[in-house]
Image (cartoon, rainbow, N blue to C red):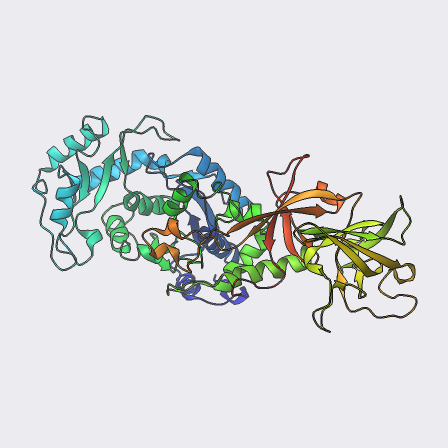
Length: 557
């Protein structure tokens, strides 16, 4: 029975297809899968696919399994397997059943390859890479048959067995499907099904010397697992012909209820790249600090920067599913994050570019404990302690010798401001260094102005944040901007030369003492400054905070 009437989500073309398949009785329930190749860390484009596959299974009371399409040991590693598992769980999803690996099916893949040979639908080809390209033809010119295409079935079976036994060197030969060298779809011009690799596999060790190509293994893995709707991005649209050809020509799977592939547009996000190959190049060339660099669009990078699982799931819902490739505005991702953090993030104060303030009429050696809300719109979150004394830190940008205009709401000589959740102060004079930079501001405070409703009823328009000096903790602040200078750097052959030199700025300031116990990766709102999270590299001797996102959109400024 279809659940379509109980799903409160926009109906896209994939949901229409599922509804039709359930209503027609083709399937009684659905099963999707998330099938990453363990050759890199997942990025936010993969998060879109995760949310789609796991989300559909949840909405339709179906199942979604995790399968690693691990058919290329030269590029895969357990490190990537572990990171992918962690990312899926962090996003809030659980796969059904045990984790699957394409490598679990290697013996079956081999048997299916033999079946195609026995049907005279596959052959071992000894053309080298250059010759194969020449024989394949072009988009305007048909290909020509390999001289090995008409090798007998018996000889092809023997050659495949020798490939499996390691009797040939890497690149010496491949197993190819026998389809149509004149097809208008290049992927059907006798594509490779198996190639020789002598690399050790992270799951099967040295048991195998031949490995199936992705297009051969992927569709068969779907069929073995009972996948009903195989969802992938648009670059695999032409390959659907090969997907169907393989399943249609294997006796176990040539049936109506076999998997069918449906394509949707991949995520393209402004000012970054969404290719694992290009992301890996950034890491290997040390243009970023690693896969989890907070400037990276990887899930681990976003997590380290302070993004929340809820915000990424919300972002995936906001951008939707379509068949049209487009560039997604960074603002959509940031707005989803702000909406989540505005409700959930605890408040605190940090001064990123500090100057000292001395309250001359405040008692020396006295430190006062005040109360401030953890969240101004959520009293249930309670209060936090802040401190006040003769010496404070404020941000350098919050002081001007002379107020530039009447709308200036910060501190200036003979101009009052309220310190957030504390007293009203009035600046009287200041000190500078040899370069004329303000180092210390001298001020007085009004003891009757504590709280939001001062006793004298005086209204002060300006409110600035501060951190009390004696208990302040020194901190490093890492401020992030776009990783690249162009909106779509991936289109450039030398994209690595487009990295924004100001994508990371480091400053040093102070934070409230409670931030020593902040949880790494958890974003806090530094009032008036933005959202920040404690970095995983922080230590007892060095507090580091990553800027997660500003309080307002700055990407277009």
